[in-house]
Length: 112
Length: 114
Image 1 (tube, rainbow over the protein chains, first blue to last red):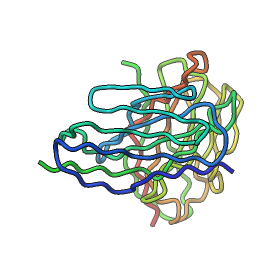
Image 2: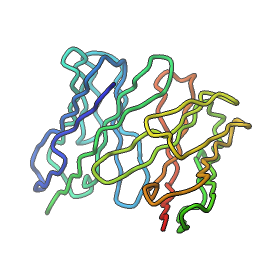
Image 3: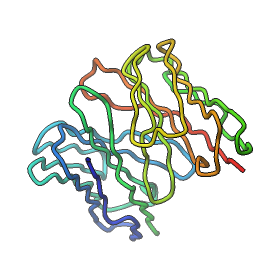
Image 4: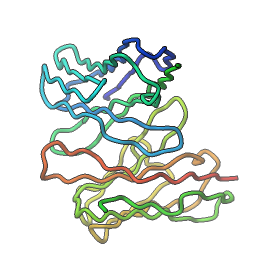
C-alpha cells in the first residue's frame, strides 16, 4: 500500500526566508504532483514531475523529484505573504490509471 | 470556461436520509474521481472512473456509490449517510490523453450529517 508523508505539517515563516517542504512516498511511482489549496478554496495544480531528476520552477516555488529516494521537495525562495496556503503532494499508484494518494498537506503561514 | 461543477456546495442532513452530490465537467475528460478531505488526513480517494460505465473503488469507498452513465457526469450517492461521512468532498477530472493527467478540481461540497 502506497503511503505518502509530508513534513513539516505546519510551517510558519517570515517573509524573505527560504524553506523546503518534503514529500516521501513508500513504493515506486512514475509521477508526482504538487497542489496548492487556499483556505476555503479548491485545489490548484502547481507542478507535475514525471521522471527522476525532474525540476520545475514557477516564480518563488521550485519542485524536484528523486525517484530513487522516493522523495520530492518543494522549495520556497524569499517567501512572500501570498504564498500562504496548504500544499499537498500526490503520488500516482498504478501506471495507466489515475489512482492518486495524497500527503497530509503542509499548512504554510508566511508572516510579514 | 473549463470547469468542474459540484452541487450542492453546502448541505446539512440527518442520518439515513439519502443524498446525491452531483459533479459535472465540460472538458470532455475521460477520468473523474471523488475525494474527501478531513483535517490531518489530506485527501482520500472514494471512487474513480476511467470512462463511461467504468468505475472502481478508491481507498475509502464504504458507504458511497457512484455511477458514470454519461461522460460529463459523475454523481456521488450516499444511500444512508452517517455522521462519520461529515466531510469536505471534491470531485476532479482529467484527460487521459495529455500524458500528465493533471486533475482539475471542483469547488468542493461541505457535507454535515447530524
